[in-house]
Image (cartoon, helix red, strand yellow):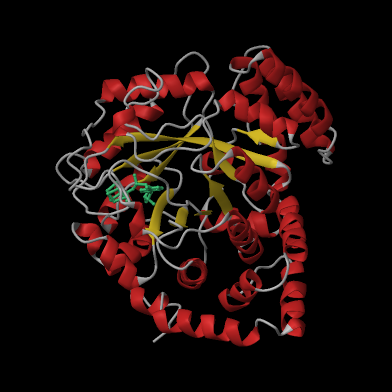
Length: 468
Ligand code: SAM
Ligand code: SF4
């Protein structure tokens, strides 16, 4: 039975409720007055229930939907786009996920785990690109990648200060863990804990996770609850699109977010929408639920409308063209200059044989920063909220009252200024300087504008790491 507050995965992600939602959507798909009412509600920018959102996803044209999504994005995120990169620490894995080449049965995949010295080299290379925010990635392997290895690696990463570089926020995408291990991750000072559900469709889940601890649907689906109970209130949910029907996944993803909000009073910090990619040794004929670009953009727009205060992440799995489209209707964070291999940053492009999947957007971080500026966005390397303790429900409260704008906009400009001086190519720097001069005028609070201007000057003189 559906119970949004239940601790049981099969009750808060109730298959019956999802099927009832899909049936309700079928019944109402031509009900233009109901669709109109939901669009009206969406325009109030307070989010939608999963049923309403599902009807919008499957009915009506793009124009009105994209227009509302764009307005919400503008109001809560302005033109800022936060940048990050993944760092693969180890591809040892005991699980059997059929979509992932790191699965234990793939004998063709060379196995590699970075030593702390190798991590230092990788992170130095990432700092030299200009990154300040990483997501660490590992396979699940209690012998090779125990929690102690992850904790030691986080400590190493935070401890590396190369020239003006520093990683100021380490997000973590590692396998489902115990409450106790989540507590340790929290104590290590992680930013967001990300765990993708892959698919919420239990039958599909069981089929594509034939072995290993991840094969237990309940253990995986309830992991975010354990993370919350372990004190991590900054959570990232995600679905790997292509495994099961995308409307089913969309509804379940929102139900998961509603569950967190109902039980802990705080929804997810981010939603990720990876689409499955070609990968070594992975039989693509297993996946018959591919999502086309137009539907993909509608999914992003409907997530933006349904969860206005939640960041949406898109990785380099997607092409530049697709990223531009979804940035327009909701995405707020993107990766850049990414490698999905273990040890792929130093030296660049080697270790390809350990790659998890092919990426589509192969541009360097500087090319992406330059591109973002040219298409009207403000690239941001900001990590201030988490370091100022503006996380979990505190962050949500600031978002909901619109106050977050007063910090995010100036912080984006300050961190962009650091990037321009320390890492940018000359044309990116020129374009970025012009952008900052224009954007500084949009800070309406006089005191904040003055402080930002003073700090921009200090950055030009060599100081770093200012935040509001
Ligand atoms: N091993 C952990 C886990 O599975 O939860 C954490 C990180 S895993 C390295 C990162 C994510 O890569 C997985 O959650 C999955 O969604 C995604 N992934 C795996 N194979 C993929 C593929 N062929 N194409 C796109 N994404 C893939
Ligand atoms: Fe292992 Fe994660 Fe890949 Fe599954 S998705 S095989 S758990 S690395």
